[in-house]
Length: 476
Image 1: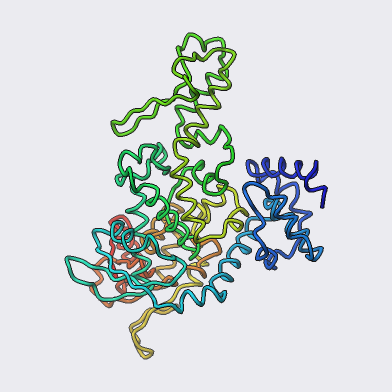
Image 2: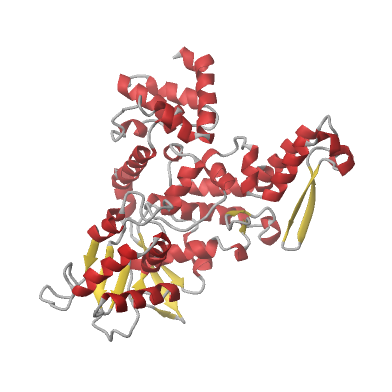
């Protein structure tokens, strides 16, 4: 074990760093040699394997008394997780979540009086924060929706899903001021947030971290485009970020720094000094990158230091307290060791799912046809003419139209990571027995598509396309 503290340990650290930047290359090199039965995830339930300050010491601590197989698997998962295919690491991760949800302490949490929160429909974020910021989001809870001063009937899984999706949309909305968007619509913490919420912004970020942790804990796929550098910060904390991460924050700034790097002969004519500028929504601030930086010109001898400090300021220092608070909230729900199985691109897939064509065969296989009574002859079933036409229409859709349909019916444009068998509740079709001039409608909180019994495929396709484009929505 002494070798872990020497050159071999340093080599593994360097390999891990390279793997995080190029996981697909590492996987190609090593996948043929890694054949562990990784579904045996008990090794991950030992002492935490990963620690920001010292991975090696934590791995070494767990070696004592372990089987040889456990030692090998722990080493791979600690230092070189990308040698194991992503699909298998997803299996490990989901098994860990399910195990945690069934553990004695989880059963104890849910034996405590089930909390019920009353949330106003037009004040989702404000009410959730005031009532749930100190809650353990791993504990089951119920939501009551209040609209115009009256409690709406119904609660349960559908209402909870509506609440969490609405909360995500409200809390991460740039108009709230906690997050900003880059030119691709990706979100990152607002560097100016202390000017908006001077006394409470860290508590808000911790709360938002809990929300994301809850989504991951419940294996919920949601549209939440986060900047790559922010995903890296959630996963890795205060480690140095690659300069290329700046592209995800500000492409123009990255382009200018790269030009500076390639043109040192022009630097002195640019009149730069060791300061950085922040500007947004009418706010502007100049920050010194080093003591007395406003009086230190950038020249051909120190331009590399300037580039590094500018990138470090924007990627780290300007949002450090926001990111630390967010991470604290997230890791109060999710064990930190578990998500270190993934890089930031894979972490984004955990949150949002995979951008790919929708597998209609898998969706059909996992669809439920709702009926009020067992003897209800009007309900949809596999051989109903409307249902036969429905699946024919979906198969004729191109990728873009299938994505639109899925978003219309379930609120998410992406399928669950391991297929529609994990969509909760299952996708369900119900015969409304209404006038066939009406459009289909969706109750996305329960993945329910309500459809009249259209007489032929042409009418069904026309009505379905109109509904998708109009995004007919109904809360149930």
